[in-house]
Length: 292
Ligand code: FAD
Image 1 (spheres, helix red, strand yellow):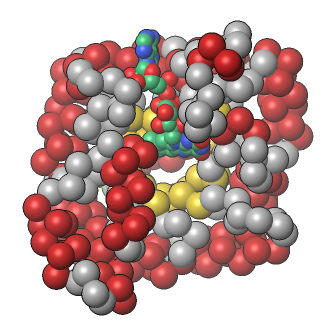
Image 2 (cartoon, rainbow, N blue to C red):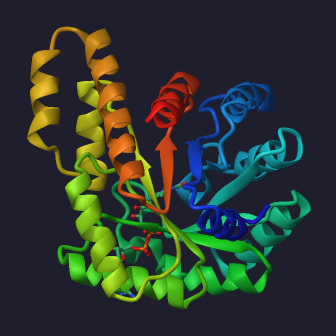
Image 3 (cartoon, protein in one colour):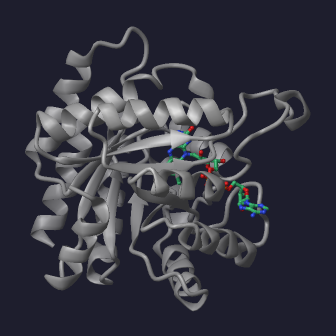
């Protein structure tokens, strides 16, 4: 099913689609591993599951289409295949489109991705699609339902939030029909961003991405790689459970569940859980939302 139809139906029914993100399991990939994770996620009844793509074609990026296809066609849950364009040539895109079509993919999250660490733009040479907005119309023309990434606190490389929202509007203008936000630990930033997006004329559904923090190491990496800020309640939890990883993990899941409940009460367009291939995280989120 197309994700724009999922949001359209949900709007009419006054409901908020709930979705999960998973990634192709790292290392020696077997589709069985992915099937186990996706199967557990699917049992929770999400509206769709998105599958990440490793930028630059490294890692298990080739598995994105097979996993998304398996989710839709074997598990009966709508799926979204991510695709990054930073290292994609025009021929490479044509191949990807053929691959996605052959796999029966309907929905694609169009992303720029990032250059591998240490590689400069000069070293990268000619980039056929410099921004995600350049990838969007190609995928729309190929018949896919296309989404884009949104940044409640602005993108790490764009200091001005207004400009970041202008860039986001370009994705809608290029044909994106839904947006998924970057993780954010402070709902006030999310509400401010959603207001700015509406004022800027963004009318497509924006589903809000929430990721529970699981460890000090993970949250530090997140903060530095995506620029999300840490509000003081999170810092206090990190300090409180500094020597107790299990309690910190539980506190991280609980914090994310409270965020989701608050977002649901505010009537956001949708909720997207970065489940990190841990069905237990998705299960906790679903049960918090059902009892809210
Ligand atoms: P863009 O929208 O192209 O933006 C990149 C930068 O360029 C921003 O600073 C933006 O403000 C600026 N910009 C945009 N348009 C213009 C313009 N017209 N002129 C000047 N500047 C402009 N990465 C992966 O590798 N694989 C994944 O599967 C993946 N999934 C993701 C899912 C979500 C929901 C999110 C939020 C991010 C995901 N990422 C993924 C990370 C993403 O690839 C990085 O955040 C990347 O740095 C930016 O991607 P983008 O699509 O937002 O790029």
